[in-house]
Length: 294
Image 1 (spheres, one colour):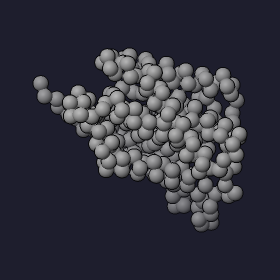
Image 2 (spheres, rainbow, N blue to C red):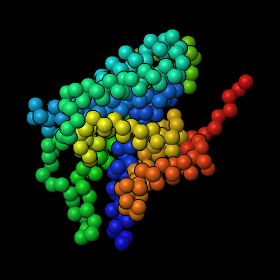
Image 3 (tube, rainbow, N blue to C red):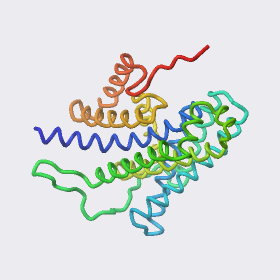
Image 4 (cartoon, helix red, strand yellow):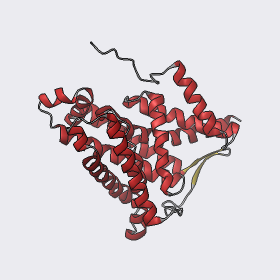
């Protein structure tokens, strides 16, 4: 029985690490523009299908495929920012306009995938000879789970390094606090905004590939961005470290709920837990209430 719970914890952390990646990309944009970027899911699903095309037509291995897809995801996210948000940001549009624009962009990207691939399911080729590693007689670790955990951890560590150890990261954090003051301090707001979306798109691309490996490729894969949003809310909306904690918590919660109550009741139980948790701690795990000066 002990091995069974250890297995659940491993599976939950691996799944939660992907949710953390989605939540980090989601939170990064929220912290800068203060709106929920639902086009993030569209970038994620298009990048996942792009990786499939790369594998099918170019015969690339796993690592080159990831590198090409990550660059593609970053550029696609920058294009979405230029088309959907840059003019709104310059004219100081309301948050509702940002919400409508991001929702439309996400739907557009999803429909492009549907037009090209219909609603069929696709799967990546087998990149690895072994599907799992036998740790003990009663404990195994799937290769996909190890890849998910490793890539997610690498993406998160690189993001943390960029945000807290580089000039670009300082600019992004300054922009998240006050864009007008950041501009007065000599920061190129448009460039930093584009770089922020590029990083967000890179995270979305990694998450899309990992979700495609864990599940299957289908156009509604973008709906998983709601899991990322839930994770970011549980962790503390707009908080980078909170997105990490919220993703892991959500992954563990889903795996344990599926084991105890079944996959049909798991979404309802997870949603109920999130409501109860936010009733007692509405600021999330790492969030804080801030009183603005009047």
